[in-house]
Length: 170
Picture 1: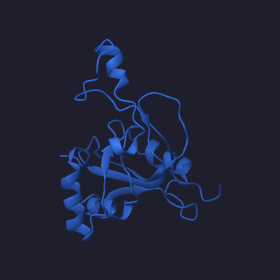
Picture 2: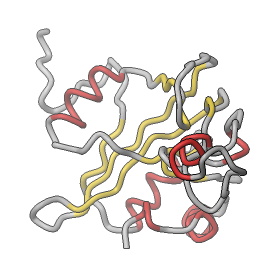
Picture 3: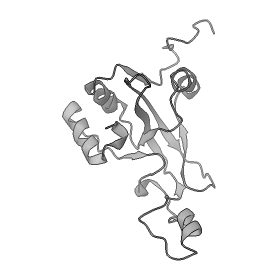
Picture 4: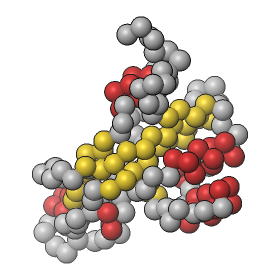
């Protein structure tokens, strides 16, 4: 079972077991969202397409609205084509920007994202989907990944710390 498949309560217990502190974590997958983090408008996408203007059925569909500003940790755990687990973790924030779009959406700001995107996400061939914890919990997640025995744990490195494939003369 991958980390993204774990229930939030189980992940919270695991973080507590590893670090001694649950950090009051609220985990979610980006496209599912947690209702308390959105300015909700109901499930308008499903309502428009499947319910002919009737009362939305809250057992399916997507949340619609902007993700509330605040701290985030963007992460992923996956198995590569050789069967090895690998992960990335990046801390940042959701910016207070009105997106004027549909679905559960927000603008994430992650320090040194351009370098992280090039030297981690692209070079290591990660898909563009990830998960979001609505708190800065990189420290706890890093310990969880180590606990799982993962050797390849990438993170958004500060400019003073070049990536192994980064040209030091650029």
